[in-house]
Image (cartoon, rainbow, N blue to C red):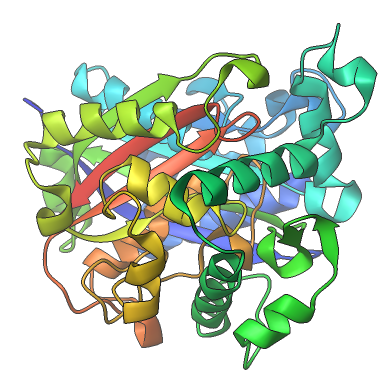
Length: 381
């Protein structure tokens, strides 16, 4: 990119039930982040909020979130997708030269106030898929899992391996909502089926939460942080709307979004240059599926990579060292949290889950059934 944009700071929150209001959550995230950086709202040029009217149960939902975020009498925009798309949109505003400092803030209390699995039903084709009442987020993910396993000759054991690794990482991350000590493959396998082959611990848990992030121009980065994490590349892609027209054994949207982000960042060999990846894998099978699609794991060799420890925190290609969405998935905020977790790693603040490998970080976010839309951001120091 011609102009440099950096993450100057971030704040995250996640729990099964935060026992708060939307407005209070937004205020606490925004004010806490501004205090961390030693600035006030007057230093922020632009606010990009990320929430969803349908999930919030009210139209123009961000109108109530702007003031507690500090965005009153400021430029303010809303992105009604996953938070990584909001980050990309905010980055574009800084690249354009219009802004120097932008706050991106994504949140949801859907985990405690409704069943998050139900919302995706209403994004299905209303004239056919929805009327049959066979497809929903979980059953579609199960079809995706079956397709992926069958196409590559993997057994269902792969899902237990992926879930136990992610839940183990989440247990060591104090910022995660679902923290279970001593999660073994056997414990994962003993959890009840939702839709075969997906079990409870293969799936993301209902989660309240949010994330606030300050993005800055190169000039402002020098003033606000001594640990800037730079946005090196970005890409987005959307696959076809109809689920039956897609090859669910892979992800075209993730492959295309990653290809565009790699090109912008100048990455020729993802497996050699990427030090870690924070992937918005809502179900256990999606982590290897998306990693293969984005060139982080060799196609058809994911099972061997997990068994050898390649994807562990200490491995050659650490995937979701934070624990990923299996440890907590606040709708709208999950992709932005992945970016904050990746930035935390690059700043050397990963705690017990700190990756030792040098290089850049890949961040992935998704929207729609079975990752219909993907966003990819490359971060580096």
